[in-house]
Length: 190
Image (cartoon, rainbow, N blue to C red; front, top):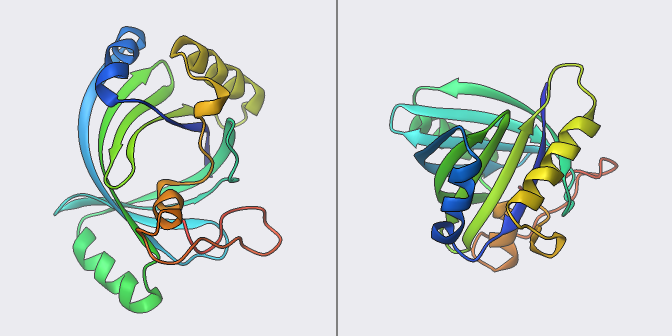
């Protein structure tokens, strides 16, 4: 499985932080509209990300719900009929949440920086430091901390869990999340 080191932080506004991120980035911003539907999954999180009517991704990932930088293991499969796949997966498993967001993607070295405007939640920043196949997590953690400092992000801004968890906690996305037994990872609700 591919791996990265991730953080998620609540920010005052995308517009306020965009110039700071742009000054650090080698590429971006790329505007991306994302519509993520989450499905029950006892071993992690499973979501279908629709990017357009003919482009999407089925994403499985495992990551602890912690506020600081954390390792995420993930697999991504391209999808060419996301609406049809969503319908099939909903009929087979039911859906446990949906997240719609406008994302501005920047690239800082090997780190993907996302400035997200999430419907029903507000503005956030995510860092994803991509790790090499045999690379130690410590290098990615150090890079995430360096970028947090450069962006002026304190520990108090960090958020645990996924957007779907925050929506559920706010009563906007159905049932609250549950933990998978014995894994310490988010279970069927992501």
